[in-house]
Length: 302
Length: 90
Image (cartoon, rainbow over all chains, first blue to last red; front, side):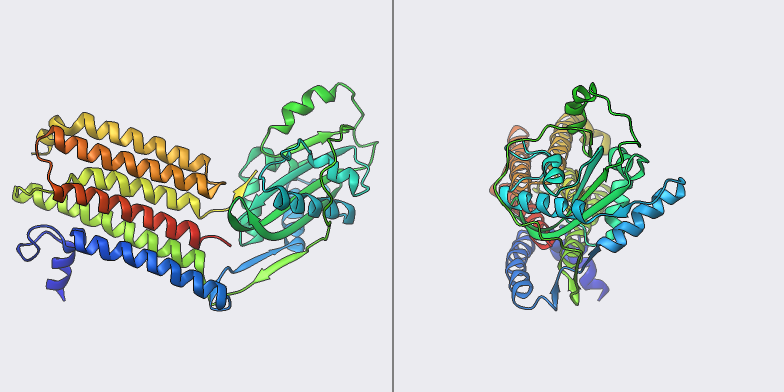
């Protein structure tokens, strides 16, 4: 067993002083395995979602509880779930899937405020947080709270109402779960109206999380869409394909980095001369890909 | 032996490190668009392969075995990235 491991992972006379894992044949087998594995996983995900798929547990109730928990820590009054704002959020989510964009403003310039007004909610203050690709409500909240502009929306005492939409669909070539959180306040007494705010509005809209103060600007009407409100998306699989694929990737990349580092140390110590590529190049390359894999499997907020 | 290696290859390694770091930054900013992110990774891999081959050529130790090694390592990186990007979709 020990001999097999050293043959596979360490430079040794049995493997011509190059770990078997780093031989062309082993790498080609791994490449083929990844491509075949991907096809197999796609097949299982499609035909047997109960076995392999996404374990998602995102709900309006939990997001509301988590939001109000954060506000309570700062003695800020809790937000009340508002049906109109939830409808606005659902319309926004549907519009994003329809137009295939990931931003606060649509490709035709449609702002979040258009959907709030369309839902019948007369607002004084309004704001929007977006998230996608998360599988747990607590992860969504954590990501928002780690972003100053999103946190500002969550913790703002100017808001009294909140609405959510959680929708599953395909966005920018990726199957994902989109979460739209809309904040609002229709109490004019809360904030004094300030007409000069329209100048700061444009500036605010380029921030990751948007807020709007008494904005009357309504962009051109988008195409019609259904404002069906989804409260919860919950699906469970025996195995999470995200956890499985990222786990395999971390293992293989980690193994290559480790074996390449060992190879450098042993070959330098034994002063063996070989006609192979530079291990440092490969280590840099695999570390770069490991970093990419690390952030690519996380959800996104805007 | 390691200081000798740094003397011979230090500048090249720094250049490769900077290019790969730039690639990682670009991949980070395009991560909301998976196809674009994959293009960035493809570009990163191409540069890594070309840089490796060019470096060995300049050092007069380029062989077909080394070319295959860089292509194989690059393809493996891309296969892993594609596997994860597809597998992490919800």
